[in-house]
Image 1 (cartoon, rainbow, N blue to C red):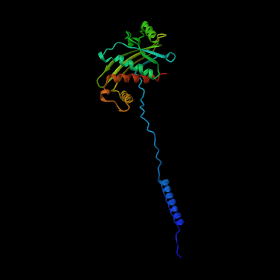
Image 2 (cartoon, helix red, strand yellow):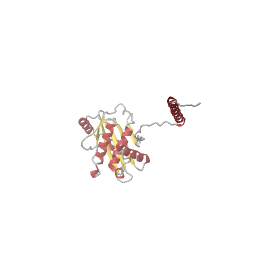
Image 3 (spheres, rainbow, N blue to C red):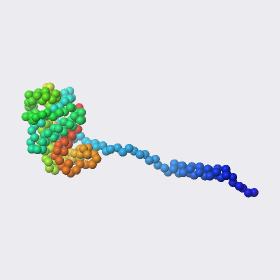
Image 4 (cartoon, one colour):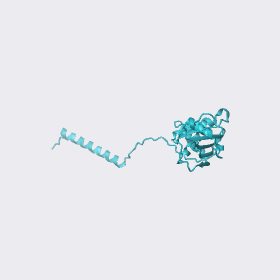
Length: 230
C-alpha cells in the first residue's frame, strides 16, 4: 500500500519541527543563561575627612550667639604682589556663604587689629562698631595669614578670631598650620583639586604647586571643620 503525504500533512510536520526547535532553544537558555543588568554610571564622589585645627577656642555661648552674617576683616598684605590676605579672605567668604554657615562679606580696608592681639582679649571697640555698621554684620571675623611657603612642600599658617558685634564677645579663635608634608593634609589637598577639575582628574603640577591654590584649599578645609560645629 502506497503512502502519499498530503500538503496539509507536510505543513503540520514542518510546524511541529519549528515548535520543537524553539522549545529546545528556550530550555537551553533557561538552563545556562545569565541576566545582564545595566547599571547607571555614577560619577565619583570625593569624600574627605574633616581635619580639625590644632589650636581652637570655642566660647560656651557660641551656639546661642551663632552669627547669621559675618564680615571678614584682614590686615595688610605682607608678601608683595601675592596678596595673600586678600586671596584667603575672598575664598573664605565664598566657602562660608556656600556652605550655609553664614552670609559672609569682606569688609573694605585693612584693619589695625590683629587676630593674635584679640586672643589676649584686646578688641578695638570703635573698629568693631564701624565694621558692624557698614556691613550689617552681627560678627566680625579677624583673619591673618601669618605665613605662606611657595616652595615644596607647600604650607600656610592662619590665625583668626570671631567676635560678636552685639556684646563684643570672642566666640572663637583658631590657629593652624597646613603643610603638604602631613599625609592627611596632602590627601585632602589632592581631593580638593579633584573637585576643582573633575574632568581632568588631578590638577597639573603647575596648579599643584601654586600657593594661591593652596590658600584656597586652606579656606575650604577650614570651612569643612566649621561646618561640624553646632
